[in-house]
Amino acid sequence: MYGPAMATTVDSPKQDQTSSFAEHDKLGPLGAKASVLDNPTELRRMLVAEFLAAANAAKAAAGGVDRSTHTAVHDYRKALRRARAVLSLVSAALPKSERRAVRQALQEARRTLGIARDHAVAPDTLAQLPLGDPERETANLILHNAEAAMPQAAEIKQLLAEGAARAAAQVEALEAALPEQIEWSTIVRGIRRVYGDARSARKGGKRSKRSFHTWRRRSKELGYQLQLLAGYSGIQVSELYAEIDGATDPQAPAVDLIMVRSFVQTYNQGVSPESFEHLMWAIDGQLEDVMKAGRRAGREAFRRTARKFGRRLTKAVRRDHAPPDQEQEVALD
Image 1 (tube, rainbow, N blue to C red):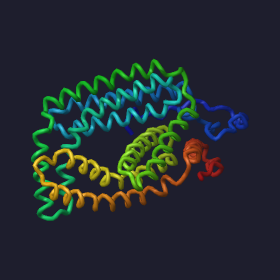
Image 2 (cartoon, one colour; image 1 turned 90 degrees about the vertical axis):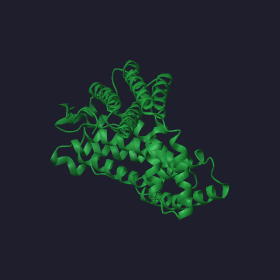
Image 3 (cartoon, rainbow, N blue to C red; image 1 turned 45 degrees about the vertical axis):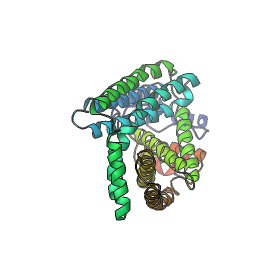
Image 4 (cartoon, rainbow, N blue to C red; image 1 turned 180 degrees about the vertical axis):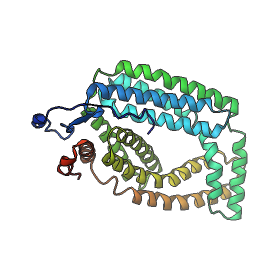
């Protein structure tokens, strides 16, 4: 859980109000206590606090660059991904212009450190590939070429500081643009959109490396969202998070190889066309296998439509907050 660890509760609606919560995207009465998720004012406050926590995590990561550049870049990019996840949860409540502006600022802040991330990951990924001696020699030559393009520590430090400051500025922009209250239906719409995008990208990932990479990004974003909500709910939402997280982990080897494939194409100066092709064939052979395995591992988690997944989430939250004698009445799909 990356935000404030709170278990805020408020008095719930009376039981005789049940009939007013007919829609699947509404929580309805949750029993003797109601979650912060069922209080529009508290829900808004919590989400702003979570976005602030993510921005602060990016700042903290930037501050640790002198201890470890690689760790700082990794933690910084992870924090900004969490900030985007929060933004996606409330996107339906934001005017389009403000939503785009905040998202673009987060994307730019994250992408500026993409090269540093690639240089950190590529050597280990190439080292783990089962390559023949000629292909290994080609890989080493490419790594040597890449060393000259590796951003210097001072440049990375500056980019981290600038990006963290840009992310921090979005906290005020987000808070100013949000309405005074955020309804649960807004959160469900955000979840459904991210899940739907991930599900579509998984289908496209059968033939498209770009789509597979998009599936990975949206899956991570969805995982952060469910992790956040689980911290304010309970075991049922935690199980949903574990399901998506379990489908996301097997994507990592393929995404690293997709990145390495681009890395090799970028730094192949001085490599003969034949040697370059042999190395690419070796990478693509491995990539095809791990992409297939990743898609297979994610089949069950992404088999539902986005609407059904949203309903499942709502039922999970209701079950987490139902009194013990009502838990059996709120069955999951």
